[in-house]
View 1 (tube, rainbow, N blue to C red):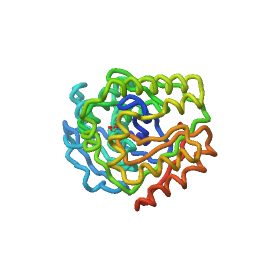
View 2 (tube, protein in one colour; view 1 turned 90 degrees about the horizontal axis):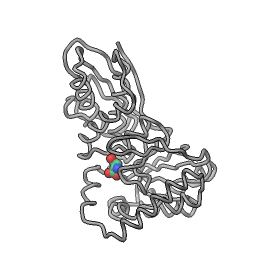
View 3 (cartoon, helix red, strand yellow; view 1 turned 180 degrees about the vertical axis):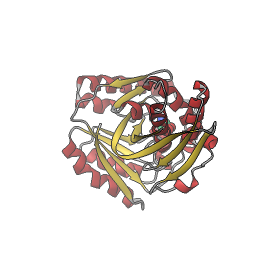
View 4 (cartoon, rainbow, N blue to C red; view 1 turned 60 degrees about the vertical axis):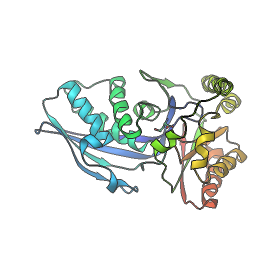
Length: 299
Ligand code: HSE
């Protein structure tokens, strides 16, 4: 009557795929433990973690992303039992690493294991989007989908598509000691975009996806550019320009903001190149006055 599941951190958008593309990373993760209880509701017993801000996360299920997702699941299936959740948070909120999405996915995957007839990952995806909407005000799957499937995933409103990626691809993700709320990072995107920019963006997305499928590093690099969102968000992230430049100076195929930021990522054509670039990328944030951690992960 108890199950435990983890969800990894993820890089949302991958620069060129705003709200559509994401990939999981090895390193930080959230762990959820869920129990069946007799009381007919959803309760949060505890939220623990070394990460900053854990104390401020609401314990009231309806105000918590993971709690909200379990309520939605329990109501939809008319479950005859309640659910009690404990969360061990390893991914900070407001980091751009999918911190709220991971709690939600881990809780759903654990709860799913307690069902008499467990649901498919595709069905869980719908409930994860409900939870993500509570956190960010928008139903987008670029964080939750790669957490559910692993690897690089195309996440639309209705489906998840796992994408092939060459095994030499590696990401560096640098997380500075800054918090940027997703809602704030989305508010700056509201003004219209000129059609010429949208077309140029479409070209990048097409090149990126084709390059991934062909395992063509040059084409991936030509595509991994964020012409729409990054220019508007970059001013919210002190040090971003330096970190990106450091990545490009170290041969990155491309570099951009991870999710809604402030974490910044870059893709490299080998693990060695990624490892060599990571200290320089951290230094970019340090020069702006922010301590930073970095993760090197296969894509
Ligand atoms: N795609 C989302 C964004 C990720 O960039 O706002 C954060 O939830």
